[in-house]
Image (cartoon, rainbow, N blue to C red; front, side, top):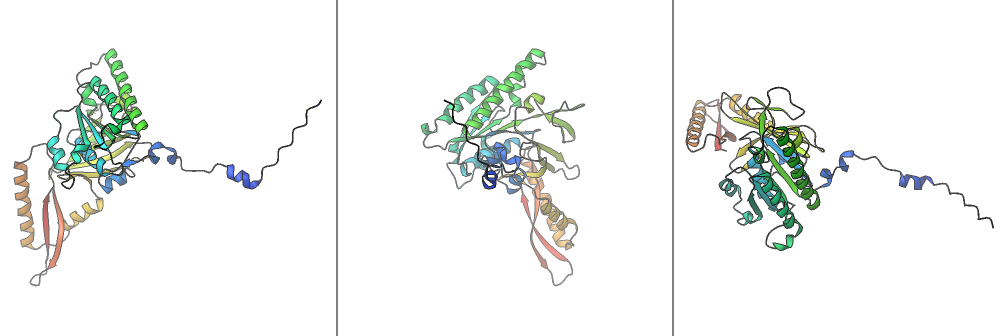
Length: 358
């Protein structure tokens, strides 16, 4: 018996075809970093630079020379995590001794006396110590109910990765291969924790001087030197996002100007923003505000009395602060416009300024 002939396929209507037709969309929306939760840096200007903050499920590197603000940013992030929409505890792994506990307490808000209960701290002296701590951290992330009085860990901070490889490895080919293998092992573990538990992972890195060429790595000018993040191109391929912090000191005033630059990221363009380190944290600087301050300082006509008073107060405040501050500390005198009053006995405009030591 002959089998029945197959029925001809019905022609698809235009409406059904339009429903199945793929629609074009922004390819950046396909990136995990664009859909993941983000951790704010605590400043609208810095958040705007990073399009909302540091994304979860990725590894972000903060590179820069000493005194650029790497540890300050990590401490600020550790205190912001419990108060952010992530509502998370922070695991702070440090390799540079000692841990800056005094600075952490000064940054902690007085309104949240128990916020330090959500910051876990551990020291890692070698790459083996770090891998052991990450394995133990995986148990904490997998079973958050074991600590009901603490928020779940969703922020991992490592300060810094370069310190772990500073003294235990030589320049021999065998040591370089072993070091690269540890890079990949550590980065694989960090990425696993970040992706599986939707964590924000931040790693700081130091810099080395670049004599000639760049070997494909990121290069920037900082403190008059041509520098590049340590650990070479092998480690650069282990992170998803790199933020480069640079520092330049004005020879005339002695004030340091710091910049945060997006060196590379899958979801961000290359751009930068100036920032300052104050007693209450790290904050971006709006170029318009800086121009307004300069305009007030140089373009407006001051009364002789107010000009001498502001100069005298600035000199006294700067001198007293420098006596009580370490050489590596960053101090800047910020002049804020308080009020402008016109005097009836003079055609000059008196500008009352507040001196705030940051």
